Length: 74
Image (cartoon, rainbow, N blue to C red; front, side):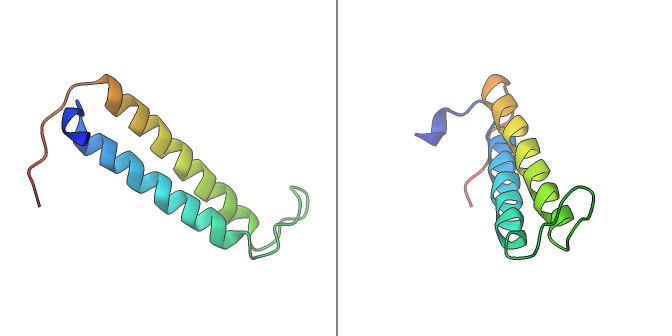
């Protein structure tokens, strides 16, 4: 299934960024988010995690469009 990826390095980087970003956003939900006017302790990590996940999505999308080097097996 994944042998046909055109750029596997960027694909797995995008998956890693999405997983880490969503993990941070999920953990930050346990803190008080507050509002934009009065930010709580979870406000910044939550939105930073979402931003990281969005960046991972862009990298993953671009990896499916571009051609890159193959990745060796572990």
